Structure formats: C-alpha cells, structure tokens
Image (cartoon, rainbow, N blue to C red; front, side):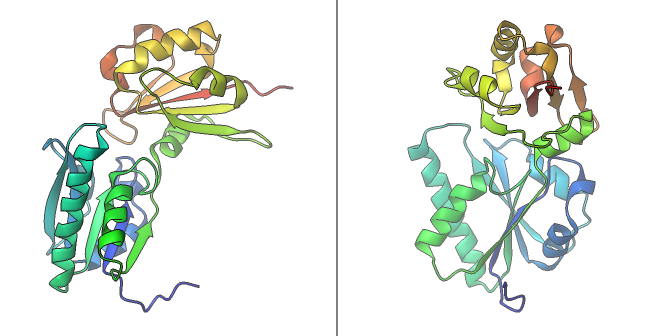
Length: 240
C-alpha cells in the first residue's frame, strides 16, 4: 500500500490529450501544490503541454521549458534527457517539489520515461510518483463513438515506422489496431488499408479534445498535414 504521508520530490503528471477538462482531479491537485513545473517542448516550438496547463489557473508556480530535438538519434537525445534530469535535481536541492507534465499518459511514448530513467540512475534518493493520464486513443475512441475492445477481442497499439515493418501482419491478427505517430505517413497508410480492404474500418481522429478536432472516415481526401497529432483506429467488424 502506498504511504500517502511520504514526501514526494518529483511527479510525472499525465495531463491528457488536449482538453483541459480531461486533466484528472488528482493531476490538478498535485499541480496546485508543487513549486516547479517542467514542461517539454519540441525544438523550441510552442509547448503543447503548456497550452493545456495554462487553462488550469495554476498560481505561484515556476515554469521551466525543457526543449527536446525532433530526432530519433538516442545519442543526441540522451544529452537532453541528462540535462533535464540535472535541472530537476537542482530544483529538488532547493527543497522545491517538482513535476514534469506530459500530454496523454506518462508511460506511453513519452519523453518523461527517458528523463525519469536518467533521474533514477543518477539520483536514486529522489522520491518519485507517476500520475496516469487519459491517452489520445482513449479520447479518440470516445470522440468517434467507436469501442476499442469488446468481449474477447485483442488490441494492438503501435507507432507507424518508416518502413511499416510488421504492420500488415498486426492488422491481420488483431481486432483493433491503434496507429500512433501517423504524421506524413498517412498517405501510405491509406494505400495499405485499401489494399487490405480495411479502409472502411478505419477512422482518423486529429487534435482530439481541441477546438480544431477532426474525425475523418473518408480517407480519399486526406493530406499529409492531417497526420499531425492524429491517431488512426482500425476496427474490424465483429463476427456474428
């Protein structure tokens, strides 16, 4: 059983896919009480996570933007993860409680995972708690009214790789497939789904929970821009 009286130095806080109303009560309560909030940003662009928490009326906080480059080179990225861990440690040494906010859930394709590893490896004395958040695919399935799983069904969640390795096999084997990190690959995804006769089973949800949210079932008119901040859910028809 968790000791609720234990002082936590660092929180990883999932803040959901975009709608501030989907930030959990626990996440909001923690953000209200901590001193320093670390916010990720991609290559110095406007932080998506910050746009969510800026609507939460957080007062008397120090906000620190942590920039991470848009690359898959882990040697480059590790320098940024280490730098972030060191900055967090500095705040904790000042006797400040800290949090790292992340869109969606902290343990699903999140930079937080790697920052946390560096933090634990370098400073094992730091007490950490991770707060779950609503994922983009959970919110997306509700937005389009498409159940992810029914009795006995299997689901796969995966990012779309450049070469689509293993994707066709997964689409054949699972009842529901959630494709994340779609990006500019949406045109090739459309071609694959058509070839497999699954195009009518697919729906793209873009910017779920935002004012510019889109739910698209007609893939013929999609362009590469539609893949940004989007998930594709492929749901096979239930056998009778």
